Length: 322
Image (cartoon, rainbow, N blue to C red; front, side, top):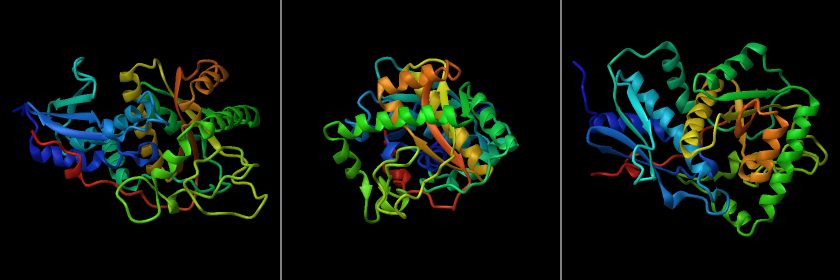
């Protein structure tokens, strides 16, 4: 018999996984609630980044990633859901509404991706000079395709160099924006905390010769003149369009790619500066010839020293009781 409502127990199961999603500066811009037997995911406006994310793009990407984890948890529990994005025109903070679908056993892919949820984390350290195999690259491309997104892996020095120029240009624009440095610093954690980016997870400080820019979270240094990573594998994730719903869906696709990489033993970090600056984003779109549609995230992929997930708030801290 089809159960037509989710329960508080279902909500706890789903939220415990959802909070493990990535978000810009680990702001965790989400809240959850039960409403008429459905689980709803909302953007938390108090955790928006006014300087780094004035349009709410990053918050929607993060909520989309949380939505993918939430759906995975329900599927593995035998309670898969049907999703409606932005269900209430009069309530724009509601990102998604998930209602119970027909019960079924979880697929092997769902089980593998769900097992990767607690292990996934951004690895901002240099990766090892070990090539990513064609099969692993194919898996990442297919993971994006399964969510109606596109993942373009940049091959060769020229495409990667072009992206690097765009990324550095965007990073300079952001660094010169009033309040940007203070905002990054406000989400940098030097002691135990349940949000933000710990300095130990920030990676080495960026040097002028680095191919790709980094955020100033870390305090680690390296030998002067030593390259951070001369030949990274770089990928661009894109969506067909760029409405708010498209950005949420892109967040789901991003999380599926990240979990697929984690399951395959790959390390990944995200580079969103070229997306945050509108001019740079358009440059990137044109440089890719429209092959990914609208760029939504840049990824650095490889093999590296295992790290650890950054802290998260407890599920009860992000659930709204009604």
